[in-house]
Structures are given as structure tokens and as C-alpha cells.
Length: 328
Length: 175
Image (cartoon, rainbow over all chains, first blue to last red; front, side):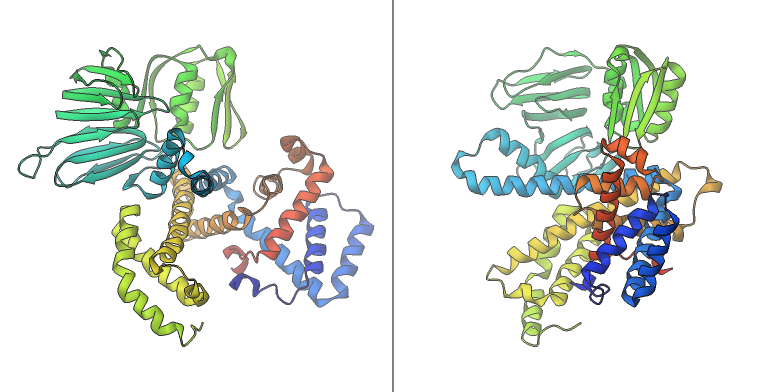
């Protein structure tokens, strides 16, 4: 590979020595005699000097990101998450070959999710928020970390939600006769009956809130039920919960806001963490504190600062991507 | 850069027969025509640079998609790094925002750092980043990672050796 071009003249043993010297100097505690030994080492061989120049170049190169270490760490962390998903997918694919027919449904769901993450038609990253207009004029809002497939054909307008949250505003079909509009989650199908509604995919269930029109839910292993405007419910493959009154605040994310109306702090942080890479945790002692207010989702740092101002809590940044809220 | 003479017509045929299909396949995954065009070109470019992969006894579309999948993941990694970095910069007051050119250099650097360090073990990687990015002392890093200072020093040497042997080339180093 091309990358070996630079190093082919420098023996590996020399690179090892250069790396050791780097570790010595970076410690910040270098004795005089050690410094002399390093100078002797440099003077002894042109290859040593060449290796040392490479060490300095690498060290200086990384240092350019030092002006904003938190942003740099968050960016690297986000990239490693992309890679993790990829790795997991490979492992799963291998397992599928090995296990063969004994392949379980639960696994299949995970694979489906992972495959979707790599191949879906619409996808948002952590903290991202996207609006899409489909070919038939249907408008979609994708919340943070959402994966969605659009599978329109002659017989139906099908959306498959693999992960995350969508808000749908259907449009009269451009095709004649009009095709049904259906959203699939991992627990069942939702058929729109002229409408605006939001769907959220949780691990074991799906949540549906209907603002306009009606939606018919057909869980994969249970009878169908129609949910009317102003209602919300959640369902598994086997059952639909009794509908509650719709909380409009739950759709505030389409405006880039998280609205908390007397929300427990732990739940608030769990919501906010969906918009932020890394860990966002809470000291159990204050998990039950109540949060009230409207918080910006596009700037979770500001949302945390607002939280600190409103409640007797302190936001502790152990590492840029490891944040804990503790008693203030 | 040379492709083997026997590889040349083969590549040409491959391109003619599979380029449009591959581009459609990529577009379906990425949801963006322009990126799909770029990555389809990159996939074939990869075959020019490493013609030996052409000899594999697979169906051409199978290895084209293998290469393309790797490029898609790379593309998303780059996009994530760029997105997160840019978002952080936008949160800064206008006067403190670096120039677009400077930002591009930093983003390229981070992509290279990510590429190189992704194949390094977790603790040496963290130690290296805590030292080089966050300017922590060995004692502080030891506390963070739950290891001795001596161990941190070993990690630092290990990480640097990894960068050296992987041929890390950061933009800033060339400037």
C-alpha cells in the first residue's frame, strides 16, 4: 500500500526507538543525562534523525486540533460509532452464515436495523434533524438518529422505520387509484387515513401520536385498532395500549425544541442524550427532580447550561463525551 | 500508477457493464446522486490502483459492492467528523470562528487521526488523544484510565510507533 513509501528506508527498530524517545519527552520530565543520550542517539545516524522528524511531524499534526479539543474528541467519537456499527454488522453477517437455519428472529431484527443503518434511503445522525418531501408530496420530518426506508411501488406507499422518530404529513396520492400509505415499525403496520402523525421506534415497542385524521394500527400478532386525532398510544407485536390524550409537546422536536412539562430529570436527560454523541448520565439522587421549560435541541450545551441555571444541579464534564449531572 | 496491460481492457469492460448499476446501488444507499457518482468513480479508481483484486474469482458485482461498501462507511465517517466539528465551530462567537480553509485542514487532520488510530487498541488510543489533544499529564491520564504512569508512557510509545508504521501524514505536518 502507498502508506509504506515514507517508511521503507527506516528500519522498524529505529521507529521503535524514536517512539520510545517521544514517550520520554512527552512525560515532561527529562533528566539532563537522558537528554544527552537522546542527542547522542540523534547524532549517531541519519535514519534516527529522519525517524525523529516523523515523530515531530505526527505530534505537531495532531496538535492542530488542540484549539478545540472537545469538538475534536466529539468528532472522533462520532466517527468511531459509525465504525462500530459496521463491525457489528460484519460479525452478525458471519454469525448468520455459521448459525444458518438456527437464526433467531431477535437477531434478525438487529441485523435488519444494522443493515438499515448502512443502506437506508433516509438517515439522520446524532443531533441532526431533517425535513424531506417525498415524490407524492408527503412531508416527513426525521428526528435525531433516525433510519428510514422509503419503499413506494405500484400497490402501496410504504415507509419502513428502523430506528428513531418521524413525523408524517401525508399528501393525496399522485397515482390513480390512490395507493394506501403505510408505515412499518418493528412491531406492526400503521395505515394512514388522511393525516398528520408521529411514530417513534423504541427497543420493544412503537409509539404513535395522531394530530390530524386517523391511523389504523395492525400489530404483527394482534387485531387492528384505529387511533383518532388527538390521541397517542404505544404498541408491541402482541397488544395496543389504551390511547391517552396527545401531548403536543412531544412533537416540539420538529421545531428544534425539547419541551418539558414537569418531566423527571432522568427522563429529560435520556431525551436530550439522543441529540448528543457520547454518554449523558444522572446521579440517582436527583433523578426525580422535575424539569419545566423549552430547551434548544440544536445546542445541547446550552440546554445543559439552562438546566444548571434552573435546578440545583451541576453539569460535570468528566470527558467531553462523558457528561454527568450531579447535585449542585 | 500503472494497471497491468491485461487488466486494462478488463477494467474497461467492467466499467461499461457495471458502472450505472453500481451508481444506482450507491444512490439507493446514500440517497444522494452526487455522492453516489463520486463513490462509483472512486470504486473504479480503487480497481485501477490495486488491479490484483480483479483476479478474484467472484462475480464482478460482488467485489465492486465490497469495495463500495467500504467507501460508503468511509464517507459516513468523514461526514460525521465534519458535521460534529462544524457544529461545534458554529456554536462559537463569530469573531472566534476559524477560516474555512483552516477548518478544512483540521477536519482532514481528524479524519487521518481517526483512520490511523482506529486500528490501535483502546487504551493506548485514549492515552494518546488525552495527551496530544487535551494536554493531560501522564499522571492525569493514568487516573482517567486506571493505570500507572509507567503504563501510560508505554501506551504513548505504542501509539506513536503505530502512527509511524502506519505512515501517518497529517496536513499540518506538510504545511
